[in-house]
Image (tube, rainbow over all chains, first blue to last red; front, side):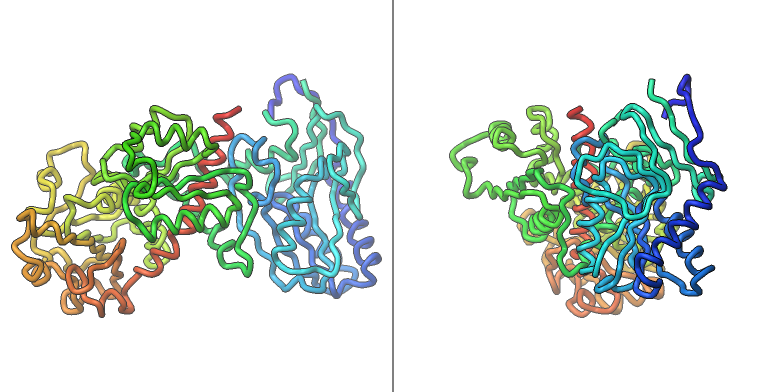
Length: 183
Length: 336
């Protein structure tokens, strides 16, 4: 994205991201009455490190290691027509049978909801989970589908022309959520 | 840029995840393919293989796209392979075998592709007995073409699936000795594989009767062709080979006087167990099919433990899915 002349505002810093993840981890365990039947499935790309962090956080206070998986929804998107090139496909790996489990989808930003819709289609091809929940670091609004998150790090009202950029240590070398103003 | 799309930066502009991007509207030849483009197709094919392994192998990625198989020559495996690939991706596929079409009433190639385009096709998979036919069609229509074999010129998807099969079987082909044996002159499979294999860094040796190997490959001075060795003595060529790729010998070659008899050809050029024993330990055997058992290859070798022939067929579907997916993406870009 163009940095020239674009105004940026930090929405979440490193500590705020850490606290949000710790809180979501507690909420997930509470809502599921324990951590035994949960699997955390991160969405490519930045949902996966978030899922791993949630798993580590849950292990720290609950003593249970929650399995994590990763989902690439490139083949399931309904907006391929609007993308300029086919997204590069990455492997999806769901480590355990999701049959009868609570799947928590994890993503960095919830925006139109189309990625999550695609993720639900993709997930159902792996089996029939008992239920599916959604955890996101940032909910920026502008939904185009009847989809909502069960666990939210931070609700951020945005304009459509703005862009929410999530940077994570594991991928970008630092933790930060930035709002980038459109031209 | 795209505004209605979620997280553009994480899907499209992740440099570490997109080593090469697809910039081709058509796929007609392997002569202009760099190794990173080949690798992009192969990593995309890995995802497709995962889809094919599922209980219900069907994803909606190409929903609403119409693919037409336009075959001016008989084919079972290539046509079926494209058909399965398109269906698995949720595309609509129409098969046109020209033997039962208006082509028999004298419709020209250009008229036919224009008609197919007018009916709503976005991608045409074409096989034609004349070299260069898809290049002619391309100039007279707006659809994307995938070359499924044109005359003696090219069979580019076969080269991709062969490289893909080799990646599984032997890892990188860089520095490996590959022998392509048989009727090189009439083989589009050989031509495309020579380009693909040399781009991937393999050392390619061609072997066969002098009447069936184009002279220009034998003269190393021809700068436009990829560097290959030629050895008319198959027993010598196969020494230490890591990969032995056999080609189909057509019976007509005898009538044309290019070989004295099928029996003599088999004596000198059939891949037998004894000959295979001269190759490197763990060498693999390939054949694009359909196999003439007992002519270019002995049945026990074709079905033996070194044979990759079935894997080639299976991998063909994943490779063709990858190509359809990448080309459909590029078409959308062109339409913007």
